[in-house]
Image (cartoon, rainbow, N blue to C red; front, side, top):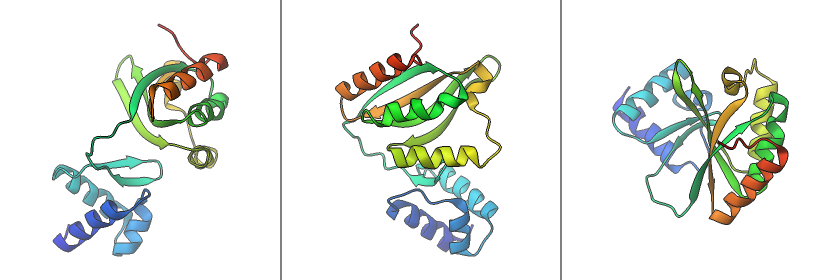
Length: 171
């Protein structure tokens, strides 16, 4: 990676208010998407806090925030995904990730970063237009979401909504 591209790429990510996808970055720098993937790996190795989401790359500042978090264990069928995600975002939550506890591979996690109905709609459109298979398929529908909210009351609303839908797993 050239030093100029590395600095410019890092600056673009820091300044962006939304995720930047690999293809648009590749076009911006007149390189292939694979070169961008490699550049991101080098920046991460250098300590840059860059997250990969289904919508693109995000530079994650390490500022502390006042949000509260809770890990919810849920189980549902693939066709219930929209209802589950909307129950979370409609009650003030942001879906940070999905993770499963695989019996062989251990914990598998991917970032989602869904914070509103538009994000959920965009994610579900990606699901519909791809050869999608849910991660939770590996664990009979059981999975976890790390949920971020403004306060504990919102987390309680989310918990009640997921429980009412029958998705919440209580251990």
